[in-house]
Amino acid sequence: MRPLPDRVLALAGVVQAATLVCDAASGASADETSLQATLESILKTETRDVPDVYGGLRGVGLGLKKLAELLGSDRTLHDLSILRYSLSLLQLQGKVMQSGRLRRILEDSIARGREQVRHFGLTHGNVLANLADTYSRTAGSLEPRILVTGDAQKLRNPLTINLVRSLLLGGLRSAVLWRQCGGSRWMLLLMRASLRKETQRLLKESGRFA
Image 1 (cartoon, rainbow, N blue to C red):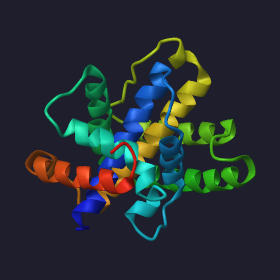
Image 2: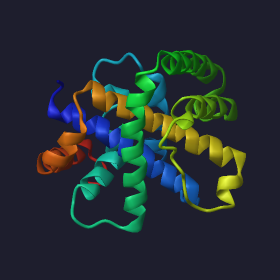
Image 3: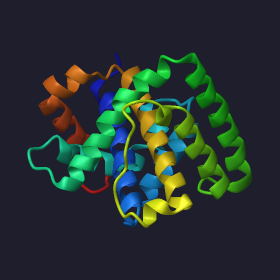
């Protein structure tokens, strides 16, 4: 089992992706540093350590801030959507990783995504379309399906749809990392105070939103 800071960072990665999904679906402006880090994390399957998945603590600062709030006592309706997406991603990762066929789809699509990024850049339409299709063919094909709510007009826009699905794939990547680091459902239930304390420490260390 990896140290607690690694598990917290992976969980924050899930929450960050879910937060960005809410922003994209509602038409809110995204935090660019967080958006870049979440999308890049999908393509980083070989890294030195957990912080490197997000380009350092700053890359997951938004997720740390929101995770600290979710582990507190006061939650808004917006927070409940983020929590719902996050818990669904944690559940879906297990089903994806148990399927050899779905793992192969992920591996092939991520390799294709790396090649596309070299030619077009991370947020190019072709890259997001590939990542969105990858999500649809893996976690998006399983139950429980994540039903994203927000601005109906925005959610009819193909560009928004691709961005939302790409961000959900980023959340799935962090959910897999959470499990690889030893994260589990009981940990969320029984270690809430410890998780919140470590989240607040890492948020302060990140230098963002603290």
